[in-house]
Amino acid sequence: MDILFLAHRVPFPPDRGDKIRAYNVLKYLSARTNVHLVAFADDPRDLETPDLCASQHIVPRTKSKPRAAVEALVTGRSVSEAAFADAQFQAAVDHVLATHPIDAVYVFSSAMAQYLPVDLPARTVMDFCDVDSVKFGEYARGAGFPQRWLFRREERLLGRFDRAVAAHVDASLFVSDAEAALFRSIGGRGDIRVIENGIDTVKFDPAAEFTSVDPGAPLIVFTGQMDYAPNVEAVRWFVSDILPAIRQATFAIVGRAPTPEVQALASERVIVTAEVADVRGWLAAASVAVAPLRIARGIQNKVLEAMAMARPVVVSDAAAEGIDHAGTLRTAGDAAEFAREISGLIADPAAGAALGKAARRQVQARYGWDARLAGLDALIDLPKPVRAEPVDALPLLNPARAEQGQHFDKLSANGEQVVDVREARSA
Image (tube, rainbow, N blue to C red; front, side, top):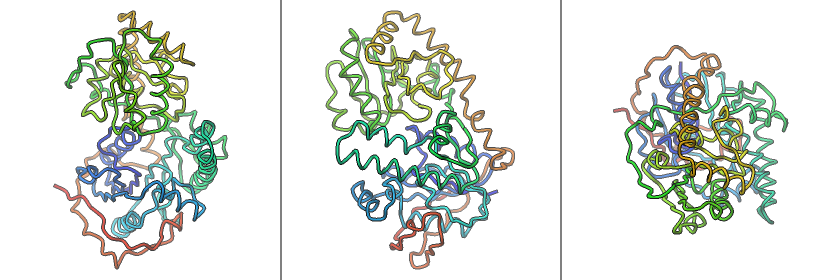
């Protein structure tokens, strides 16, 4: 059996929410059959991705946000679609389809559905993860003109595209019952299923080996991709409205690519680490881990990781949604409640430790990746687990011979010259 796996980011290293899910799905599928990955790299380091599956094609994504916005306005598409429309990527997809007997396609992130041929005789699974279009509506509520208009436009057009994709594919996946219900509420149709996120409880174990961090004072930790708007808004709110009400504690913002707004938060009580090699040391050192997200979609991996590290975790209602925590998370609805919950856990380390241990037991019982992904077996008709061996690298595409077929989004085949596609070579 051969599966084509389309991803909007290389799922390695698994160091942010979307890449963690994509990596574990890819790992699960590759242990059972031949998987052919075509993915974008938005970081030059991702071009050196090690072999993850039978074959892989990594395409640099160089299109700027302003260019994507202009293309979207000109073509009448969402910015999300335009941002990932690329002739090189299309050529790579066409090449895989022409050289491998593809039995199934796994599409990770709805913007990648534009590369699906309409008449492909293969089972197609669309992993939406969460309802991205609704998130743009939430952005719009707090924005001024013209951003408000752009966010509303994105909500409308991306929602329309996602509904069309769901009606076209064999199954649509979401990370929680809440996200699946939300998609149905905006008109989503078709076979809509839930495949929850999991957590590697062997790696994220306080007893594992990792470099420790010595905070020197009670430490509150937030982890995440720090150029992602909901994360930026969350830490700004925490520093301005919550931290001043907590005595004698330091707040650490741990995550790659902090924006200038985030970097400006650094002070005597606020640490901005930028990218770290391993977040486990920071989580293990935390008196409390927090997720004060006011805009959140799906299951938050940062919360599962902190729970697996046996840390007491205080989260917003939005960040807790979709997580079966059985009371092992503390939730807070406003700044005063956040400060009260965090201060209480810092003042009573024994209670915090007990809550953290209970949280770890819950994720061990509920969120192992193999158990969460087992639903894919019947959905894709996977064989029993075997180790798929990487195949020899395919030759680089000849731009003059790259053929464009009829695809789900015809605009993705834009006729631009195909210049190069990097393909991984097996060891």
